[in-house]
Amino acid sequence: MGVIVRFAPSPTGYLHIGGARTAIFNYLYARHHDGKFYLRIEDTDVERSEKQYEDEILESMQWLGMDYDGKPIYQSQRTDLYKSYIKKLLDSGHAYFCNCSKEELDAERERAMAEKRKPVYSRKCRYNPAKEGVIRFKVTETGSTTFDDKILGNITINHEEIEDFVIARTDSSPTYNFTVVVDDAQMGITHVIRGDDHVNNTPKQILIFDVVTRGPGDIYQE
Ligand code: GLU
Image 1 (cartoon, rainbow, N blue to C red):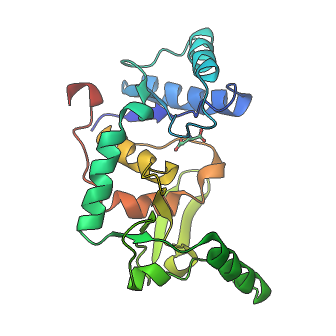
Image 2 (cartoon, rainbow, N blue to C red):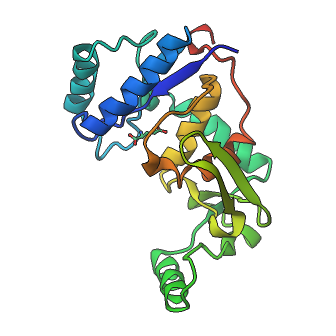
């Protein structure tokens, strides 16, 4: 299988040096292996995403001489795809509606902090699902997830430390941890090269990856 990587900036600010660094690593890895290097604009956060930042990212890529394959992929144009996967997860029992109020969740969090426990959602609605609200992913309650980070080595996270995280907001818009996995799967991404600020997201994304069907690989041949 050929190498397929992506640079996935969010247009919520100018491309900074950390982003450029991530892009360069992806670019060099793809070109070295004669693989594909895609640019994916992660613009699902409508409040914070701005067109001016998006334009600036495209200009910066050009200025840096990093030519990506095909056209940029915009997450904002893939909402139907994400929603179809969310429906699949709900139908197959991998996700559920939660209508716990902010006050309830805050109180849970404060209790956990007072008891010096990691604040993790109690999963109340998992056992008594609501009919509407946010949609949470059911994290397997036992066991752990291990992944091999090429820089940091093997990382293992116990599932009890991962809460049933939100994959769609009350307005049904999907969240970052969900869209990124659907896209990485659909685009046939073979290696995820990104900043270590995403290490904490990786186990959540692996758990979703396990239940999302892998796509054809080359997104331009879908
Ligand atoms: N959009 C994310 C960010 O700008 C990157 C997502 C990823 O590389 O997985 O931090």
